[in-house]
Image (cartoon, rainbow, N blue to C red; front, side, top):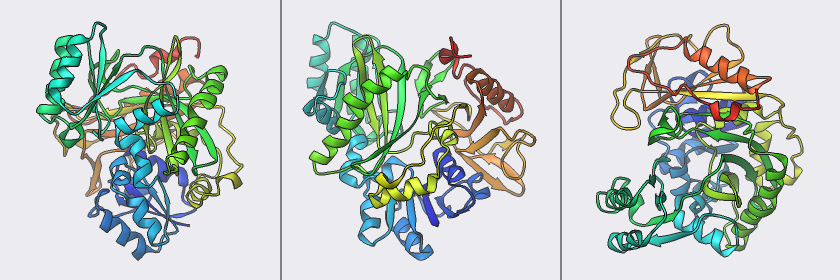
Length: 428
């Protein structure tokens, strides 16, 4: 098949690597590392919907795999389907599952899908008055729209909650995404990410993962797009899996059908196993980043076929989805200063010409923000590399990933040193 992958980060590199060299793969815009595995078109942004559609037509592709959330929210899948090109990814109406926190919370409330109690506000003053009435903290404040995975503030006390409303709604910290906000109860318990591919009716569950959102060790500092992850998540036990399938996964897919916007693509269920049962923290309408870097290496089936059958609405015909019995760990290497101000253009050492580490076949380097010029890789983003190792035990995967990180260097590089630590107890 000829396949176009839209986007240019670590998630897209993971998708391309998993599709494999048996297919002709293109990527727009791509990045320096992706160029080793696909023909890239750096002049076409992921959100350039006209450009992506024209490129797909020009290349005569059989399938377009839409990577980022913002392209989905802009209706790229709708445009492609109109001209007869198969697209893996939800249409604009269905992408609201991620693109609007208000839509997703109201959907869960309507269809009795377990989630945190919440209130919605479009007036900052009313939001502040509501916060003044709260007696229990922390509380969670979310921008309604897309915010690169950073539009959530956990406010430890009333003053910080009021400040969060000011930042999001008045100072426009997340732009127009913060015109409306959701204020919801703070939940506690292990977080679990679960990925389910669906054609709107049928579903194939991939692996679970554990993400690490905060920039600093021991979950300190600002929220980021993700500083590392492991898979599978040891807290996703058989009993919890059964509960999630019955109360969350099936009802969500059925709810989207009933709302007239069946979901075609992959739903990322962000869950929390609370003392009162598993609850949905959030939905994402695409593969996570960096979760894709750990779940896709564990998938043993024909990934390109899975994507194609989903896009065709024939996922029921796909049967080869046996999970791997191994573990993966991904450590994200970021630019100094991320997720706030950072510099780019730093030369990266330790990688070969294909952007990988020599003599470490069990380790894959996924490029999130790199540029390749004159035989050298340079930093070109906040998150730069995702260093992923695969092994027969979780501890071995984590140790091997950090061994690989030790072979890479660039000026002011930063990474967390505790990825997977919480998952290791009893799972070594």
